[in-house]
Image 1 (cartoon, helix red, strand yellow):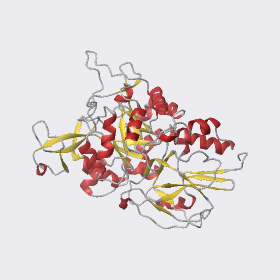
Image 2 (tube, rainbow, N blue to C red):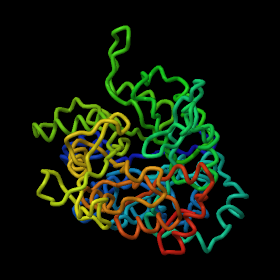
Image 3 (tube, rainbow, N blue to C red):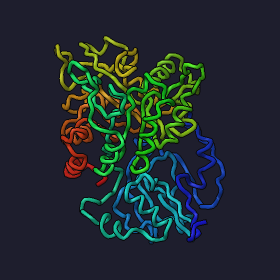
Image 4 (spheres, helix red, strand yellow):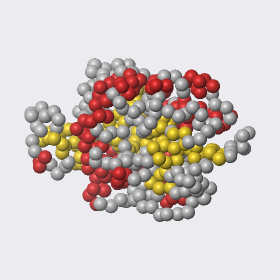
Length: 475
């Protein structure tokens, strides 16, 4: 027992535990059950029919409701949430509630009574603010430096009031010609230098860069293991070590993608995608990203209309929750003269194609963009949401490495098609590209790689620009 005899009940609402255990991500069936009854009140799922993105993922603001030793100084700052259910404040539980948060209405973000402290958000993923909360809980004393300096510094910039738009740093990791893991960046998915040696483009070491981006203010860090589709993931010990070492010093969410699929090794032993994902989670990942395997699952689901429950997407979502599963979509534009030319969802282009085409559909690819599939990005996004994805990482091969901005037509199409959060990726080359994608689409986050690796645009420059433009961000 801790010296202060406090009980720290993290993550799940006490009264929602049985309800959450009954929840299958791909059915969303709800059975009302009686909770443990420790805290009075009711727990329910966020209502996505009102336009909310569910799960509630990202950095949102706390509203302090009463004096709390561990939450002192947190008013006006963002903390990291990831959940689909929430407990509602009421007269019956008012004496428990120490903080609320607003997402489609107020919900309980923290409770405190006697020696009991519980929070809905993740302090261990809430950067310095969250670490200070944990220190206050463990020792009874919050950091003077954080209270008086870090939390007060630049206070006019820190009027957190709602869910912030996220700025995510992405690190494409693969082995170079010498076998060392390096961070690289592709030009339309080609990561090799245009030289006779065709060496893998080397932009730094993954652990060091991830640590720097955390210090620079990245809201999340994503690792894409782009050799994962060729090498057996559980044998990819260097990548697992990268995750372990990064998680020791980076206290924002970490996502890992690449090679998460069922696999049979050379000795004939079968490993399920769930085993592969579990190894990544144990090594420090908060979310895993599925690419090619999700495309195959979606194709089969669209063909049969049946949710088998055996695909990697469904299994991992069922065991770990859909908030832990990101589906990475890698489409390329196919230009059309008429939307009637294909059976897929098309868009009328803001900028005509190379031959004056007014329309395009977005063909999904697998195996690092090398193989096109008979499914569109729109159809894939709708299918994987049904199968249990909690978030979509939306790339665009045409824009990758070009620095001309995100594909607004694509991002708008997909973010309006689904009720889960969408991360815009590919094409960022200036701070204005971030404000454009947030203003013109309903995307929840924007991801960039090369401009951060090459120090062309600092992360905080992006956030300061967004703040000036009126977009809520975590500073």
